[in-house]
Length: 136
Image 1 (cartoon, rainbow, N blue to C red):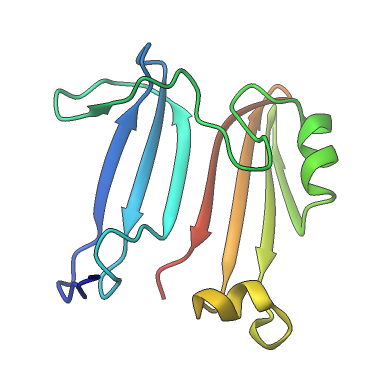
Image 2 (image 1 turned 90 degrees about the vertical axis):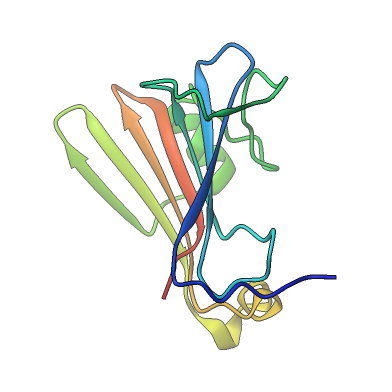
């Protein structure tokens, strides 16, 4: 049985890889169904916290094979051209959006207005990515 959470607080859970090099942050939005996370953020660990949850996994990888350390060309082979690209020095951020609710079975199935994915590269190597449904 799923419970509805009505608190107006965004909750997060941080999971750290077995070798403490990667982290996955799960975001729970206010008003969501209990135990249903809406956004996911994978990056390298900058500082370990004693409250972090450890997993036996060494890497965090999406269903489509995206993981830290990919090159820009590898991402483009998986995702295609981005909807927007922001470049500053040796940093590049590739952004993808699904925001046409009426035309998207995906958005309709989750009853959410926008899905996004952002991939950040340093010197051509994927150093973090975040994806999911933005909090309205």
